[in-house]
Length: 87
Image (cartoon, rainbow, N blue to C red; front, side, top):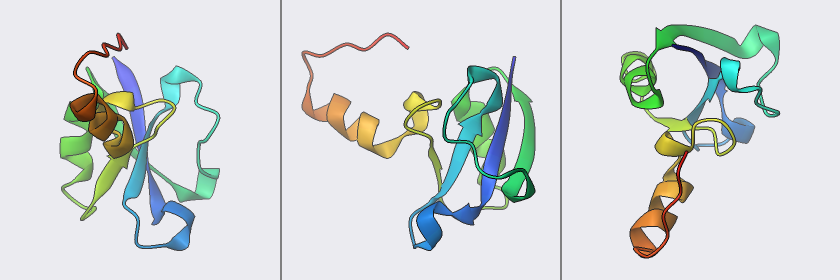
């Protein structure tokens, strides 16, 4: 099981979604310690996102450590049906 957190501040202080991270994946883009809200341990990013959505209106997975829940990655995969990424 992996440990997930969500940034308590929106991405770059804008209207972008709150960003979720898998802390056990060695992500290089983790927020500052004081901006981390622990979600707990989950089997995958989708389960963690469901938990995060209970108190964050919009959540997106980090591009680097939560590929499965990242909007840009998912958009790319929908447009590139011939591409298969095994994460």
